[in-house]
Length: 71
Image (tube, rainbow, N blue to C red):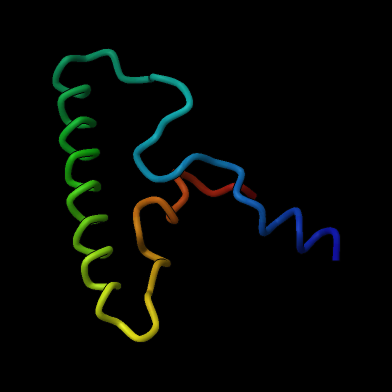
């Protein structure tokens, strides 16, 4: 049971939120900002669609997708 709990806990930040800044190139930084902006747009679309669903589907919401695997 303990192993299941440990493996199911989120060990990383949500998609697009990096703990360490590895990108210092201006073009790369701009790409990351565009990616984050697009993730925000996707999140809004998912939130709007989930309002009208009997059973919301939050599993692919950008805040629910881990930035990397945690195993």
